[in-house]
Length: 218
Image 1 (tube, rainbow, N blue to C red):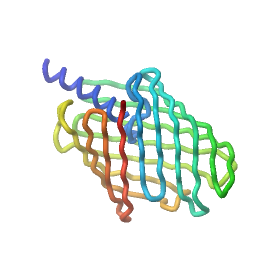
Image 2: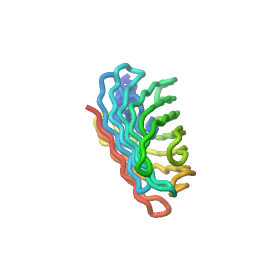
Image 3: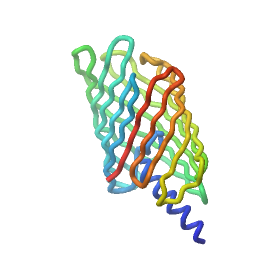
Image 4: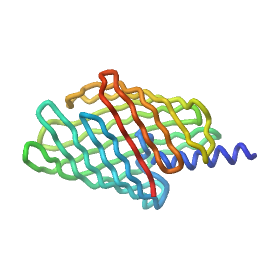
């Protein structure tokens, strides 16, 4: 019974700490626990993605989002409010899986001009205490600048099974497909460390491009 309670506590802490799927993750999760305020940042040379989230329900969150992405035609930025929702969640004795959806409508800035643009995405993940897999896809619609869409897949393994009050670590490999950006493909081995509500990731791609991500919840 003690081990089952410990596993349940770990799954709760994981879902809180990893915030909209590791998505991840992500992917940090798009929808953290109810009442949480989260800050998430993904940083690479060709793109940054910044989120401030508030979960007003256990299955829904609102987000203030900013993106910067570099295309062959130039640099574009996107500013928008966003809505995230848990479409489906599975909880088992030692594992969890999630499907998230999200949509946003805001302003795209490109080549000194501003115009309305929309974005939609889907994020999926599944994890146990030892293994992790995630995938996501998102696309932007607008009449200004180049099209933007991308896909990402992650596989991860934990070198040890951490308890809920211990520092947990993961080794992952991430594949990104960004056909409209200056970096069209990226394969990035990375390390993830998290403790309670703070997460940090660092990696270097096979093309020597750095990646630094972090997330925390209040």
